[in-house]
Amino acid sequence: MSSHRPFGLPTAVAATVLLLAATGCSSSDAGASVAVPRPPAAEAALCQDLAKELPDTVAGLERSDPEPGSELTAGWGDGAIVLRCGVPRPEKMSDPNAQAVEANGVNWMLERPEGGGPRFTSVYRKTYVEVQMDERYTHDATPLADLAAPVARTVPCGLDPECV
Image 1: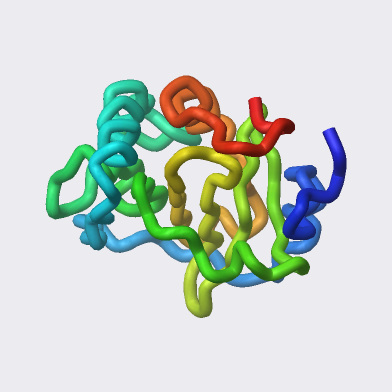
Image 2: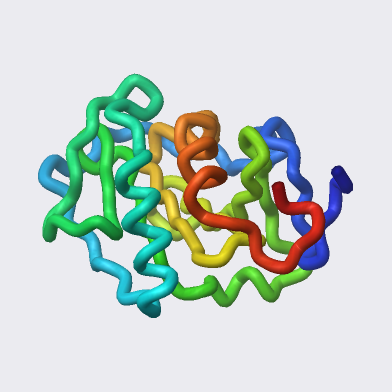
């Protein structure tokens, strides 16, 4: 697999971990609340399939879905890790300098929002899956490994021939 993607994304998790800026660790807010995406029906169906495959634990954290309850969202560790399926294509994906990681065959674009932990969005798939992590994961993208297999099984690749 190439180390550079069409929009300039390297795929090594280790490279991303080294590139992440240092920030302090803090615990997440209990009872997380997130906006539920509103994808087209075909994408929502993929997200419903993904919801059935998601693990009970991610990075050792127990499942604790955010409010409002939806098949398009999931969470672990009272908001430490929050998944949203069917999100719009992030504007940053058009940036040729955007960074990415590869975790167990799934490529993810990395964003570092102000005042929070990393946000990853799947690329090259028929719908976008976003994973927001709190600050304790600023230097640790390994929770994506727990989510990669369900994403790969339920959200097919788009037109990219390198997607598996």
